[in-house]
Length: 637
Image (cartoon, rainbow, N blue to C red; front, side, top):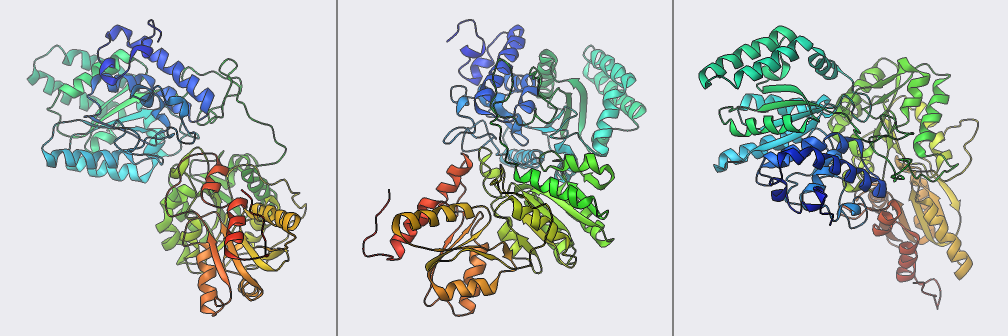
């Protein structure tokens, strides 16, 4: 241990509270460097954490965590928090198999009272915890830290509306860095900018705070009213005050001493018996300068050289599925002016930033508002446009009611481009696209496609344009595609028709999606090592099913293995139900390979697929265990 290191000598949060206040700035510098050093080894969400270093130190320095509950929205910003809360020695296991999660998790630490992988949940959770505190007669603070981007989501407004009317004491810290994953959009962003840029208000407010400290309580109360009137004068009324919050700010979120002073005042002033909103201004990615860093690269980055700050990415000539989708949509939009694209604060992540560059008037980033994105697309579809809604699978879950009520029931031709379908690796179960096959294929009239490679994806994007009488979805995974050639000319795929890839006997593997390569790997092995030919089929569609293909496979094979990158209740369940209804299960054994009925922890994508059994080894074992193909079979370890 370095005796001259402040951070190195802090083993517990209680030790943090014992250091000299004059050393807090040095501690922040060391914590920022430790965060950068950690992410250089593990990769991860760097920018948000670097922006809240001073805020993190001040919160743990002033408040009695974990008794006082500290809830981080999303969890991207929680790396410094983890370092300070008994996880300093294991922080280098971040986002690795068996290591720390990239987000806050209740099972990981008593300092994580609420898990957060999706945004805009912190105020709702904090209000629930504050109400529980009051009902239990306890005395503790409940603090939620939420970013300006997350404040654009409807759930945050719902929580604030409820909190403001409840008169319940809780502390909401608005971390305003003017930069969520993508540039913030919407009225809230403009409103916050208006507050920040109001210099007369800032000057008046700072003077009022200084005066308040010098007067007895009854005059302080009077001056607080004067201060509130000043807010009305300079900002045309304060939105947060109108919602029932006691508003403080904006304040420099990197001034550790001011943060500590204000937190101490908030902590000690029990006369404020309503929710408090403390507005701080921070710099996302503060302290990290990289020659390749853009605003969005500060969000999530790969491992990097701590000296040069350049990311260690292996160059690949194979495009990502995201790029194939983007390029295909741009090509199609060149000749079809009715094509429009919609994303929910993820233009770069979905590839639609490139679409926006080419067609700025036909791409809409609606902010972190997936529900609105879906219904907005439904409105466009009503008027004859062809909307493509590009959202990660895990985030599309947040808009399921709108998918059902506003799209499916009205049978509107909204086209969903579902990125990050399947396992996503280090981000773990909160970001895995596990359920979209199940929750979409159960809806009447919905068409659900899954390509086996990038050429199929391009064809499916084109095919979706021909579907003008029903909603449709194309799901595709994170990462690089297979490496096959994408056709120069777009053709269409017949709706609900799969294809036979290899013809064999006895055993058939019916695959939906990109695990088709594992099935082909198995077929190659069996042919080479055991002189066995099996049938490989690419389903292409989870709905509608290719009934003719499925029935043929059932009649001609003794064992069918269905293979899909999704949860129970999806493609395989639909296959087996159809065969049962056709009385075709008598002579055929069916084995459904899908995600298990539990959440799989973060790891490499391929490791997660192996743990789920969606791999060559497991399929080989199933064939050896369940069907006698030869008198003597060489069992492979």
